[in-house]
Image 1 (cartoon, each protein chain N blue to C red):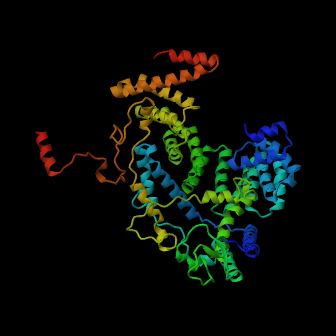
Image 2: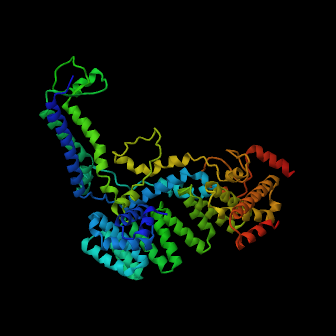
Image 3: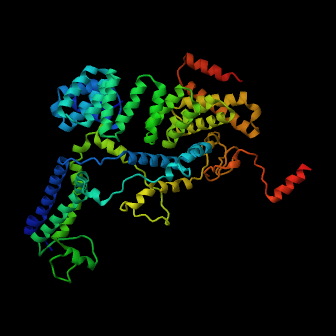
Length: 294
Length: 303
């Protein structure tokens, strides 16, 4: 566990540990809202003099963002303080837009972001938040349109491609989802999750060539990470099983052999994983199911 | 040979102190003067992002199937409407930009802010502490350095490792840079949130290195205003260099210990260089060839 977090569990008033923890969260841009609120708020209220001015306002912004998830009243108070300190700041205006979003006042939030865009037409954050508003309202079709428009401008934004992938999957547009997933792989080829995801999509589509591709991508995902990647092994097992049962006529001899070997490989790994665990229902069920030969 | 303690007290240490103080003052001065964010306009932003994406695709093309690559090509490479065949809308760094106040402060801070104090101090020191030697460098230098390092001393036969105060100043200047960075590191260690301008700049300046331009296209680098038009076209070089081979197919073979395919032509996947799909009239029609040789052959077959 995090060193600072450990200290804080024992001594919650340790301001140094709190400051260190918040710095870490800011550096890695993690969204642990509960912890930030729990340890950041006393830091602002009691120990504000121990932080330099620059850092104090960074922490205030951080706690404000955490409060949007857990405690809106505190966020409101912090927002007022920030607005008093920086009256015409673009950054604080964005935060006020976020606050309106968190309160659910979509119209107000839209007005704020559009006014930002009038003066700063190239502002990325405001454009992104406009897409988020339509998503929060539940309007998937409109969100997909807006996100496509955003992506036609910001083609390198990996987060946005991920979001579009999720939206397409929710609408079951698998070919479009495939395109997005390929973008993710091209952007981050070492990330095992993208390969796993695209393998899932190929498996879902389910034609013979797609199943083979799915199998290959599962294998690649395993190659990138073997330790905590049991889901890829499951994927591999299911794909090879499906190929064996449904498409055995369409595979020539060498392909059948490869398939069989991969099936055995996946089976062995899953078995091995469960044998390491303590005895419970899941373990016995899985081991029994694996023994059933199709 | 011993160093005169007076030289040591009144020359060496003062120079160190002067350089140190000037560096510290400069650091605080720069943090007071706010650096203006160079306003990125929408078109430039779009093109930067386009180049980032194009670069990524070309770099990692082996991770996706050939058909995926081909489906992306028309967007970039199509003759008239492809993105990489458009003129770049980036505004060149014309001379008029230099007098824009926001650019001015940036430029001043950047190069001039470092250069001017250095030159001024250098002149000052060589004026104040002139006419005597200060240090002996522990390494041997060829004779040509004498004119540079022994300013103000006319002895031509003197060993070149004895240097004047100006060279001591330079050594101290470069040496203390590291110390100053360490000193102010704690202050700059405050991590920045997603919304801070520092992070925004980092996100904006992720522009990739442009594609290697061949010798035939003359380019003046960042100086020329005329060649900005071709920033997008230069990216096409990257696409031509893609030699696609679907690497993922090897992973499953590796898992079971089979020998991998390297560049072999595998069933369902061709390992040819990428070709831009041409819009042929006869694409959908029957592809029987009708050269004279084949005409005869086809005629024979009919019989």
